[in-house]
Image 1 (tube, rainbow, N blue to C red):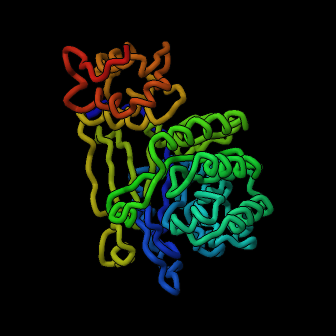
Image 2: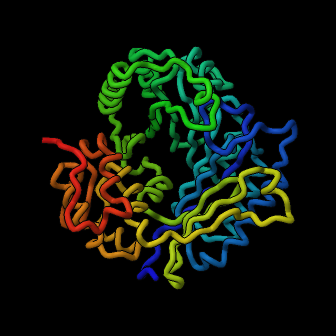
Amino acid sequence: MLALTSLPPLALYIHVPWCVRKCPYCDFNSHKAPSELPEQDYVDALLKDLSEQLPQVWGRRLSSIFIGGGTPSLLSGEQMSRLLSNIRALLPFNHDIEITLEANPGTAEANKFAEFFQAGVNRLSIGIQSFNDEHLKALGRIHSSAEALKAIEYAHNAGFERINLDLMHGLPGQSAKQAEQDIQTALQQGTEHLSWYQLTLEPNTLFYAQPPQLPQDDTLIDIQEVGEALLSDGGFERYEVSAYSKTPSARSRHNLNYWNFGDYLAIGAGAHGKITLPADGQIIRYNQYRNPKDYLDSGKPFTRERLAIVERELPLEFMMNALRLLLPVPKRFFTERTGLPLEVIRKPLDHAISKGLVAESEQTIQVTEVGTNYLNDLLALFMPDQVKLAEPINIINLS
């Protein structure tokens, strides 16, 4: 039984599983939307799902909500308002709660964005991917560069002050110059947060089965170096592996809660959650049925699987999240959020420090630039069979 003496912040993830069209690189739980979206039934199911989870979080307040997908901006403003107002009736909100909605430029409408804002959404994450029409077509996106720019304009006009632009690089046929142009266009849009990450070919996707021609490694290195320099010159700080913000207040609080091993309820088809239960001495991970039809079947439970994280896996679970952050992580979080003393990872942590992979102060630990580049090797130190080794293992030679 874990010695869990405190509770981390609590967030809520909501999954809306439908898209106009499935992108060939996407491995998320997304399904082609029917001609008539069953949005009222789905919102009813979401609220019932949340109601059934309330007993495990009585007395706790929500610090953030993230509505992802799929394409959650397919929901109407009316249903978004009903969803958020009913959630507020079920769970108290922090006064400064962050409520993020993912939006596809191909489904952007000025009136709809205004309705989302009025419903309580205060942060918009727009899936731009690229401002190059050829690359958007290669990615199977349904929007054009002009529509992407129009969506950003709609977001500003609707009143959104917190807007994230989601960009990818290493796209089929992309040159370093074209990747640079994407970033330059993004920097001109007046937003304070960017997600910028490399396209990867994931199993169970069309691109994995039929790989497109991607840039060579030398080009990818050039793109990364030029992109990071441009973002830095534009006033953006890289605070997470693929996230950049102009100010600390512009950072994604919802994602920071993930990386700091916080708790998050999960509702919706295929959603994954994590909850700390101090009375039981357990930390639980669970996931909901993936298929929307199964999720909407009132005769079935919403939860497909619910498992307690075993003690020997907790160090790796914590570090897999914490080391994604480029910010200092309070050392006390390890004990507070795993129920384990820091001593259980002292030897592998010291080894990582000696190799320059992690920096330590009296109060914090922080991955270094070298550690970020060798992240898989670094995480290997905290595998369940490694954390209690008498002697630290020598995984890489950096000398």
